[in-house]
Amino acid sequence: MSELKTIPYTAISLSVVGRFIFMYLLYKNKSTNSLSLLFCLLNICSSSMWVYYSVQTQDVPMIFRSSTEITLLVLSSIYIIRNKIIDKQAVLPG
Image 1 (cartoon, rainbow, N blue to C red):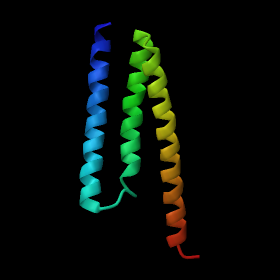
Image 2: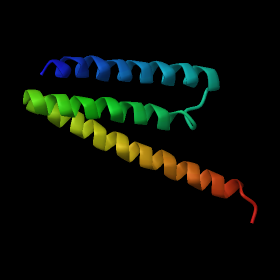
Image 3: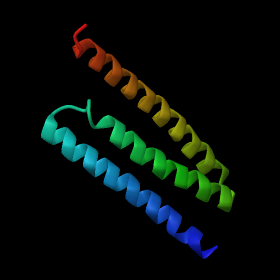
């Protein structure tokens, strides 16, 4: 049970690091096109840890919140990847 104590801190750390990376790159590049996927993936990892932790501690509201966030982040990631594929196809000659 002691290993469960590190999960929320690790999840929060991933979330904060992901948000700071996103904000820095957004400011630097003035565009989210290449950065949104990294942001989504870090937050999917963080939310997955929250789901595991919430299941172990039987925190139903947090399970629902984190599961919903994962679903939305996965959909966002699929959308970003789809747009990247479309952009690459538009650039390729032929």
